[in-house]
Length: 464
Image (cartoon, rainbow, N blue to C red; front, top):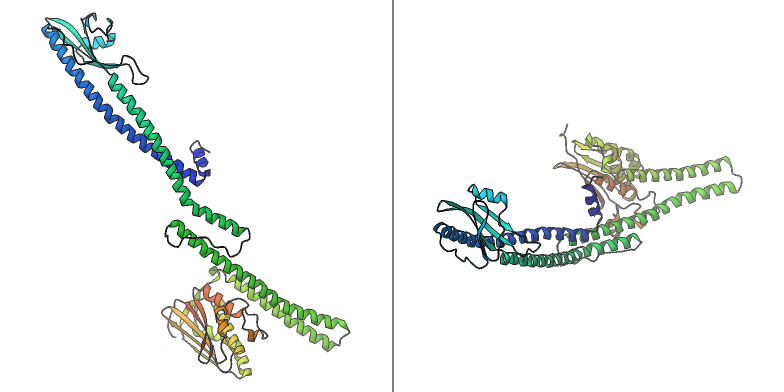
């Protein structure tokens, strides 16, 4: 890991609240440093301007006095002076300045060449006892070269800047502490619902039932919407768990019945010697129950396979041929029962998965023949890019309390509990409709039950 990557990895491992507070602190530090620097620069510029104006005025008056050989002016409060000859010997000086020149040999040489020297003596920090600002230049008087050094004390200026630095440091520190505290409290308040949701999720993971997060109803921010989303997810999980429990219970019941019958048939056959005819009848009964188990297993496998729309492979197929293929296996059953079987299908080419849609329509016809009376009507039409297949009968219809769960797995009306079937037919139809991106609807019509499949089909052609 690089040197830059290590701090980033360390930062990402910190709690969110700590990261937010650090981000606020760093940002505020940069802002306060910039603001303090700007204030300091403005004050320093103003003080330096005043000090430079005083120094320039004083040096100008000294230059005039040296040129005219007049008495040297006293200058402003705290001002100092030195007058040197061309060799650097001090000719005149203020009482507070030692006789040693204030200029270095290099500066003395620069002034003799006509340059003007400006320099500060002493530092702002640490505190220097004799802090000065000086300005030196060459002056010619009566043909003789003189070097005039004017200086003013920086004590008041430096003291003001040091006081300003202290005040800015205190103000910035207090502001940073206050901003960090406010950021911490704000982050904690903002993330408190998230922590509450986490605790709720942990409680749910521990086995709690019917858990709901306490989400305020009078807010509409990101955290509140997260809470509503989590509650919706919990509703879905609870409904899924309930379906799983019901599925296990119903599957156990459906599997128990054929297995019990098979065990009873075998026990009876083994109880005493049986004739060949009796053993054959027993084997036929066992074979029927085995076939029932196979059908049940296949239906469950089909439902699981349809759980993903990736198993849907659309291909062009003529709607009339598809319906005829689905209905044909049931014609003999209808004839034996004396029922009419009427088909009305558009001769249109559609894009669907016939592998799944044919058995789905066949299941609807089978249900109508087993539970209806009289005629069974199958209509299939294409409108606006959707195919609608309706299968109706003349029977008593669905019990009203059964309609909301008609497409659930193993759901059967109480009146049909003893009839043939596992209760997976309509569940399979619903799975086929969902896999195609469509819907399945069960309802009672005037003369019986009607189940409708409504699927997007991308009609590919017209009647031929």
